[in-house]
Image (cartoon, rainbow, N blue to C red):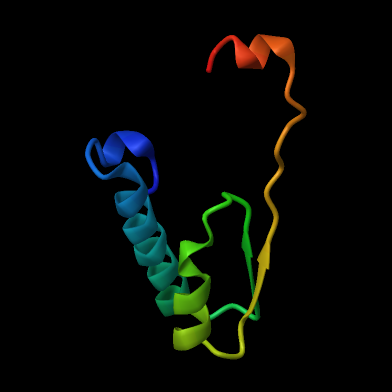
Length: 74
């Protein structure tokens, strides 16, 4: 739901929708005390707080150091 190949058009909008759907599945399956997002998509934070107000939301995203060989791919 959050991979770019799932949404060939309007990718960012599709990923936002996919992240909200996945968060909704997580909340409906088992309401967590703490939900940790490690994917870097903050689209669902508001939805989680709306649907499960006592759930704490923590976001961790690791961005690597940029090296010359990475710039060649961009």
